[in-house]
Image 1 (cartoon, helix red, strand yellow):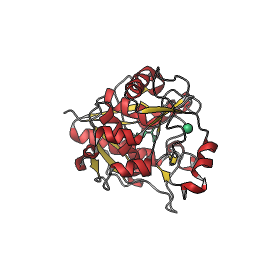
Image 2: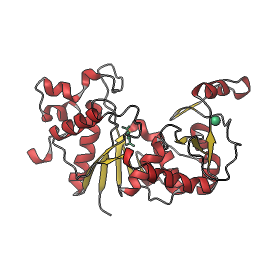
Image 3: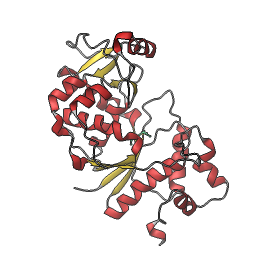
Image 4: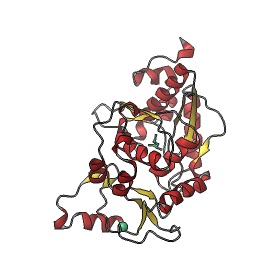
Length: 288
Ligand code: GLU
Ligand code: ZN
């Protein structure tokens, strides 16, 4: 199978050192394997995505020495694909509409009979308030849709989590864990028609991505993505979760830390090789 990997930033802010590390790691891996590297723009959240950020991201990545084939895929162009995947899950009774607000979820999770509120990869674990709402008839178009994780796990079984899928290997992902510690994740947001987990899985499958190289912060999300791949009969790529770049105090870099934006290092006269060294990567293969 051809080695195809991607870097999929959200154009909602500047790229920082952590992004540079992620993009360079994926790019270097593609070069080493004689494969291809693709840039994809995760702009499904149109309330936050900005064309200026997309332009800046491309410019910073070019400056770092990366290149990718055109056209660049944008999630905002792909909503019909996401809705088609959602329809398949809907017809199997695996989704249900949810009208809870953040506040409703907080209140339900804090109810005394619920015990201490629990958190999963997407924040508070959904307490299941809407789980019994009807799942028949046409798929609701203007409501959030959640995956019934219990039904999903019954449909695919635990064997879905292969050790060789992940690097580093899964910390024993079980059906129980998915139900209790991840729960009924949102696959379609009311305002966007799809949500991150669903969109990324459809994109990786349609773009025939063989290797997903991304940060350890997404390790728990990967299990959700593997579940979706099984439900949708998509192949599961190999996942490599790389270390995270932290600031001097050990805090993970976030987009709001503009001080560490690549653009700022550029304006200070740093070279791509300096940035590679700063994140602990060897020099670009073309320059050695
Ligand atoms: N847009 C996502 C991010 O920047 C993509 C993550 C991924 O699935 O690789 O976190
Ligand atoms: Zn709900």
